[in-house]
Length: 323
Image (cartoon, rainbow, N blue to C red):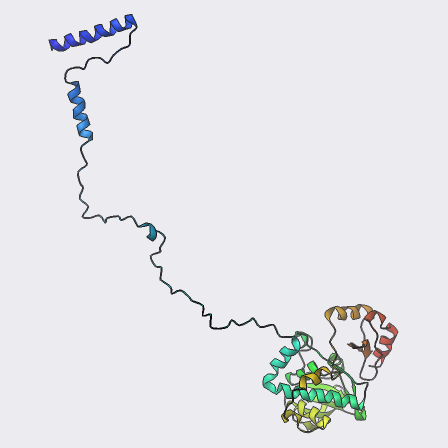
């Protein structure tokens, strides 16, 4: 105890002397027992932590670098190897409307029916050179505009729409555009469809029997007379009178004949809009051929003009009056 007091007095005296002389203070002498305490503390900090029991805890394993991005449910997929020996198929071009129409009729004796309609056009134009036909390949022709036309008649009107067709005995075929007007007073429309007529009687298609009948109309009521043909195509074939075209062998010139048979393109929606604005509500039809645009009914036809704007309105109104 006395020794410690003496040491403290020495330290105090040292500090006083240093302050008076403004000298640099050196580290004071260590107190007895101080170094031992410090060493003891340092020893405690360096003691390694005791191992804890981990028997009940799952060991956490850090994934390897290559496995960090692999999903648990990932399934290995065999790499698809392209076989270069197999030639790549070029994408098919979309079919034109005539090609699509032919494809749709391919399971209905379509090629022979096409030849039949070509022969009908040629036969009708030989009888009367002014007879004119057109085609209707619009995608909505029968879905929207003329849905009442039976499927048995649609291919005929697509390929051989009779714009103007007057035959022996004044038998007149009506165009697709005229069918609704011609059947306006027909109380049995569309089950009984008038598609041609003479001055004395009618030619009608019966959708129930799918045959063609001679008929008469009295006050909107259609009276069926004798059966002319079991189908529409057989009726056309009988008119042409060139044998059994529907079952005859085909030649490679069928499609060329189709192009050279007098068929003319249909009007575009833009052309129809011009006709509506320029001529209003008319009772005739307007078509175009290689010479231009013309107005017609089953009784009369104007000459062709190079454009719709040059087609005289007076001529159209006159042709309309013959409907």
